[in-house]
Image (tube, rainbow, N blue to C red; front, side, top):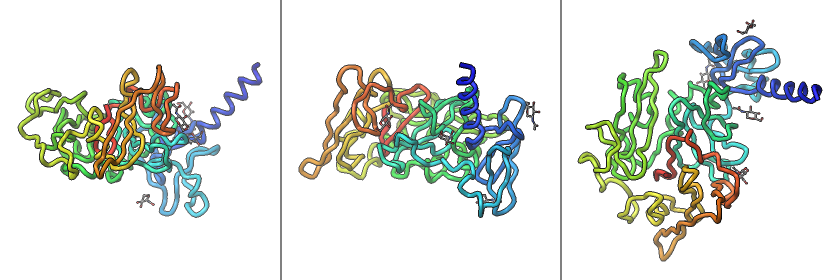
Length: 330
Ligand SMILES: *[C@@H]1O[C@H](CO)[C@@H](O)[C@H](O)[C@H]1NC(C)=O
Ligand SMILES: *[C@@H]1O[C@H](CO)[C@@H](O)[C@H](O)[C@H]1NC(C)=O
Ligand SMILES: *[C@@H]1O[C@H](CO)[C@@H](O)[C@H](O)[C@H]1NC(C)=O
Ligand SMILES: *[C@@H]1O[C@H](CO)[C@@H](O)[C@H](O)[C@H]1NC(C)=O
């Protein structure tokens, strides 16, 4: 019994010592901040302070000898912080930033999808529910260095969002004010979102949220409201011929945004939309969609595209918002 316990402890300690970005290595109390930067850890085993760069052509490796900079030529494959923008083993999602992710829909490539973690939660490729808390020992898979430099993978390209709001953290760093800020003027997409800026340990952090249901963000009241603000335009939205708002409750418009035949997820609410899926198909040159509900208490798995009993990782309150091809999943 105690042998088994020791074996288990041994295995998991070893695993956590080997893994990865932002995880403190107990051997020398350092972590890899990025592919080529180290960072100190505090007494609570959490990364703290400014990152230190490895010498040129060296990479950060966390292993049995602690966190060390090793020559890139020999250690490139062992370098930490390389799982950002990679789909998880179930091909369900990929972390695209420290608190953002994208769906993979059963492929090993990121789809045109933007998911955000709830406030304070971070995206981890191995987390059961995608986003989890650093306080629970779950650290972000992506480097914080990626958040400020790599906005291309986290921004939804087809919308009319001003470039400055596409990366909430750089946006908040520019605005330098706490509070909620409107994102754009597209009545179907960005008008329903807002960026929440907060000052965390002296640095500005921003997160994009989507108002629940069909509510709009009102910059006048700083709340999600039913009435569409006058700044929002319904004409700028889609290049498709559809006039209906592309929401998941409107399968035809949703499918016009997907522009591909197949099965797609509807939402992230475990009690309702997680049981549903939409089948998109081309009918006489026009995209059509049909919404289905899984039988009994089964959930729709966006990777296997079948109804199954296991709760999908996307169905969690730790997920703040999720879009697919610009359409907000509910
Ligand atoms: C995820 O789990 C795999 C397999 O256990 C491990 O190799 C990898 O380092 C883990 N990644 C993170 C970011 O925790
Ligand atoms: C790492 O931190 C722990 C806990 O704070 C401390 O006991 C240990 O001496 C430190 N190790 C090194 C190598 O600094
Ligand atoms: C560290 O890696 C980044 C991105 O891979 C690169 O732009 C930067 O030049 C590297 N820094 C050093 C000191 O090698
Ligand atoms: C969803 O399907 C994928 C692919 O078959 C599978 O690996 C994964 O475990 C499933 N997710 C859940 C929550 O069962």
